[in-house]
Length: 151
Image (tube, rainbow, N blue to C red; front, side, top):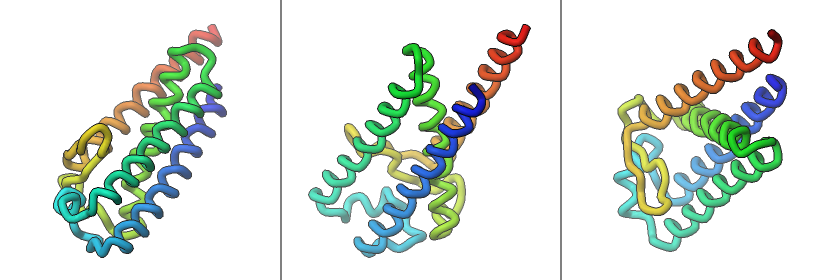
């Protein structure tokens, strides 16, 4: 079981880097300065591009749901798989952006977390913290399950 979750984490990390690269190109194409907050830029982006970005977000969530449906055995298992993969994707998305363009500059940088159904705006420490806590809790639960299954 641990191998499955290791591979799911790798999938989430790879997906995060892929999305990070897409966002770097998007920022460059739209003339967004690397240090600029996404919240400030949101007002400047044409509505057509906001719609396109929403479809990318929807596709991302759909991919994570499909992986959970394919890998999970029960609804609870599917939810855990989704949250685990989502947490790695979200956490490493910010790491990828930082490694590529040194953004965000710190944990208090304001970001547009999602556009669906309307913009979710918060400092980047919020998704980083939630993803980190999710990974820790699921790791503890998996470890306890392994111990009890062993006994």
